[in-house]
Image (tube, rainbow, N blue to C red; front, side, top):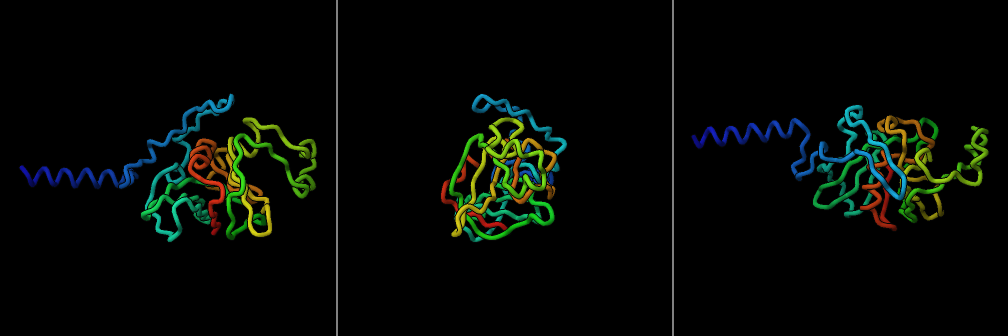
Amino acid sequence: MQLKTIALAVGLMGATALTGCSTFGFNYSTASYSSVTDAGYVLPAIPRAKIPPQFLRQEVRYDSGEAPGTIIVDTNAKFLYFMLGDGRAMRYGIGVGKQGFEWSGSARIALKREWPTWTPPKEMIKRKPELAEFRDGMDPGLQNPLGARALYLFNKGGDTGYRLHGTPEWWSIGKAMSSGCIRLMNQDIIDLFNRAEVGAKVVVL
């Protein structure tokens, strides 16, 4: 009977691993993507079933050698890691810059903004003249390209112009279609915003 019990326990552990459960007690199936009311805005629920499971928020083993609180962006794999320590990280699916708008290097979070204003750069307005109406800034809201939160990246030269931000276009996660900034689903950027500190190191691979 004892041998049967052990065998059953091992079998259940194997089944848990196959379903994507983390050994750290965080299962991607528990990450909430339901509707959220935030600062008077109602973020719609994200249809989880339409998001590839690997891009759902989940705790994973990731030995980067970086200190807890560091953010690592893997643009090829379309993952962002927030280092938790002890070889663990919270992983988020991201959308990245399309061809010609990729970037890499190190920066730091200089500013954090809730429901930020979006101001398209002059180069973007030149490419898309219809954005000229927002040259002085687009008000925060559900259609704002920066979404519910934005983390502003600076380096030794000052503002890099790049952001880690939310997006209402959840279907763009896992794809290369932005103008260089790193986008997360709004529910995920809120989670990351609450974890990340101003001054935190950001490494873009």
